[in-house]
Image (tube, rainbow, N blue to C red; front, side):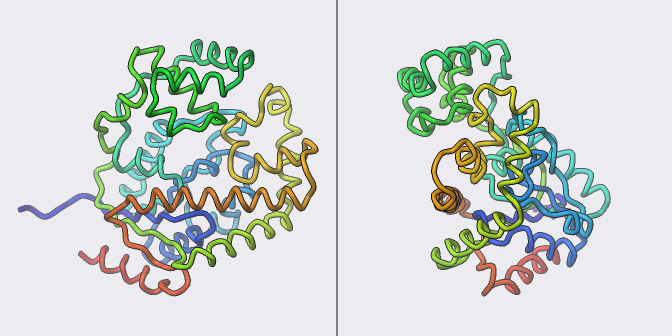
Amino acid sequence: MGVDQRPLAIALMGPTASGKTAAAIRLAKAYGGEIVSVDSALIYRGLDIGAAKPDIEEQAGVPHHLLDLRDPWQSYSAAEYANAAAVAVRDIVARGRLPILAGGTGLYFRALLQGLSPMPEADPALRQQITAEAEVVGWPALHAQLAEVDPAAARRIHATDPQRIQRALEVFRLTGKPISHWQAQPGIARLPLRVLKLVLAPADRAVLHQRIERRFDLMLEQGFLDEVRRLRALPQMAAVAAPLDLPAVRAVGYRQAWQFLDGQGSAAEFRDKGIFATRQLAKRQLTWLRGELDARWFDPVADKDGLQDAVSLFLAR
């Protein structure tokens, strides 16, 4: 058997607030790496404090890629992400640097490393038609329609998730086949890489919950609500009929902040809702990560040296 000549890459995964940004920067500085964000919130301009986007100093110390690609009133698909990330990774490899894929968006990791199933392209006219239907009957009613034609997809998609409901109905109306059929088809990996998958997660779930609470409070101190006020004041955002349906506003914390600024609940209730939503996100991320059977897990505090040793051994092969 020949020697595997594929370029090397590190995939640093983990739930929110697990310390991925600091670890990725530390590894990039130690091993000549550049960081490719694998986070669906960081692609949006203006989502900085609430999305824990690396600050100017952090970005200056280590090259970062796939940040600030879209405005918050725009959408961005996993396929678009995979294409852009593939270009970034190839450029990093060509420069003789180490790609470090860091983030917590499982769909983006899957699109990049495993490939997306074949799927019809978006149809803007049909999407507009489905959106118009939702304005009349509501997204829960369209979710009920989806349940009739694709029960498997309806079980996975929440009745308050308009983007995924819209896409599932769009695919069915375009092709006559449910989206679950297309998703079952094998995909083609976007990158021919040898990837070391590392999961950064506290061994004790209570520790993660404490980290989430501390980080949310820090975001509030840093001006998170002012950031959301600035987003709301943008003319393009003000022109959106249903801003809470935008992918950017659905990012954890932003939806709760938006609703609070709409007059829903007290400041204390907003804080509790934001922390709870972040914990729920972390729970979903951990569920997905447990399915990554070839990944190695490390505690961000107790196993910091072990994480670096694992990377050293991988790169020395």
